[in-house]
Length: 256
Image 1 (cartoon, one colour):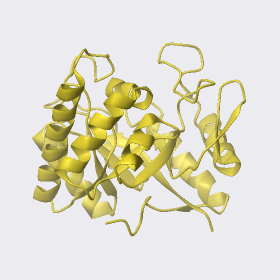
Image 2 (cartoon, helix red, strand yellow):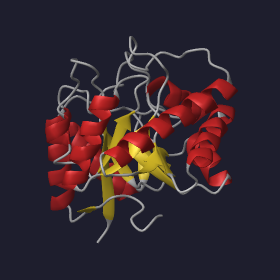
Image 3 (cartoon, rainbow, N blue to C red):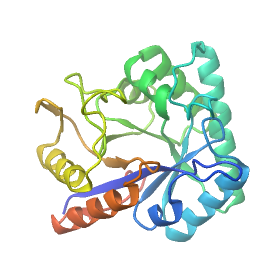
Image 4 (cartoon, rainbow, N blue to C red):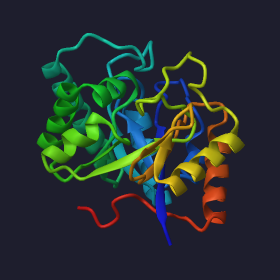
């Protein structure tokens, strides 16, 4: 039977601030992208998230972003390519350390927010992210939006790459996410999100807001952990996948 991974961005609180319901999400997803302290997260949150993920048998990865707590990493900041490479390496190292402290280990990298959006479009930035990941640990895989420059850059230097689609975001005709704030950017209805996911998996394609099919492998589905319907959406998607005979399984099982 076909299988697919279900991932979410977690560990995005810091200090006394809490973001999303990580406890609930870690009972649903198969992979967790854990914030590394720049756009969100801190050592306490990271250690707890990694520990809970280990207890639940959930795969974990580093989720680096711009150093932008105020903007939740969703603002485009003017860092150079070299600066981006180093800030990504720094965050991967922090994630690896806190995961080890919690008795777990990271197996992949997935960029967050504005940094991720830029890397999806700009090959030079995508190359910087890939180089940073390989420099810290060449066994780390890349989890990135389907058809993005991040996938191309990672594969070019021998990094195992896995392509994801978003359950709760709309797509442009170019296969990029519709910018937040624009019509069709967010899919808030859990039923609609689950239906779109099944359609894209069966089609083997991203389906844009205009209905265009852009063919791609699909290895993982992302549900944003900070949305108000995150738990309901993730749970419903898991149910619909199981009803469709699709097995929930961590991407890259067997990858070093």
